[in-house]
Length: 144
Image (cartoon, rainbow, N blue to C red; front, side, top):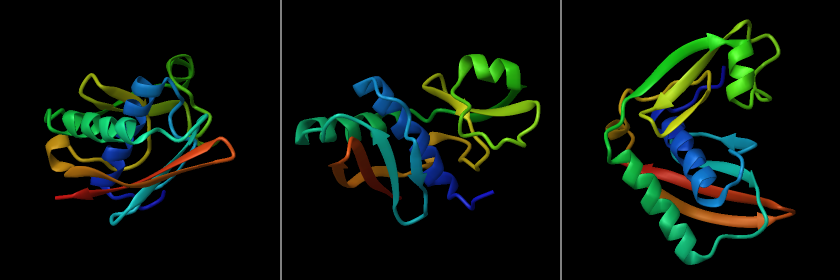
């Protein structure tokens, strides 16, 4: 298992759900999560404008500030396949899937560590974004 920073990994989940809700896109298809800075790649059709990027940051931070519980639940692989995209799960993941929830805001299969409450995450900052070949890359960091 990769060594993910729990704060940054939780922020990634919130960013993904916010992208889905704001733009109707899928969750990131690729990510690189580290303590100092991270990035997520999305299949997209353009670079969001300055106002949309500011709204994205505001929405992510609004969710973080709600002090939502971050919890794990286990369901069968069959049930997970119906409710979630399980394409990124390892082939040898077994018959049970760990679902990480962030309050009632987000739920997805995940094997990484997370904080217990969004209040432990820090403030989300968008470092930069770029768009090339139908891929939107968002680079971000957290400030404690």
